[in-house]
Image 1 (cartoon, helix red, strand yellow):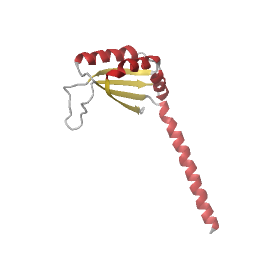
Image 2 (cartoon, helix red, strand yellow):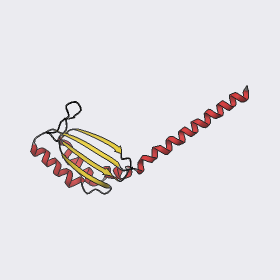
Image 3 (cartoon, helix red, strand yellow):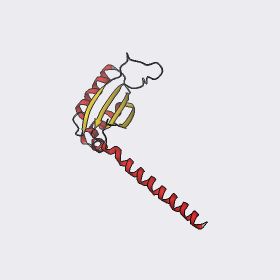
Image 4 (tube, one colour):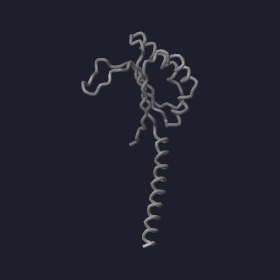
Length: 137
């Protein structure tokens, strides 16, 4: 009986270690994949002029930060809508794809990014960020 209990205990302990090792391995796997960084800005002033100024600021400060492999941005496509699922509460969308998570981390503390935030934070009403790994096929 003791042997059976001890065997079960050891099997459970071995399983716990295996699960922990697997989780640690997979936690770092994403950092090697490209990272999509999608930012949706709602501005306090929704005018065309305000949106154009903001887009120009994004290009000025953010476009050339090292580590990105794709950079695009634009105003909300007001003539495109899917009635059930469209989200309409943003003015400008920014899409940056980074080489990996580490490149995104460098981007966030880069002086150009900090200058952008310092200049434009006062005109943000709301900012939403969606980050996801891009699975290579």
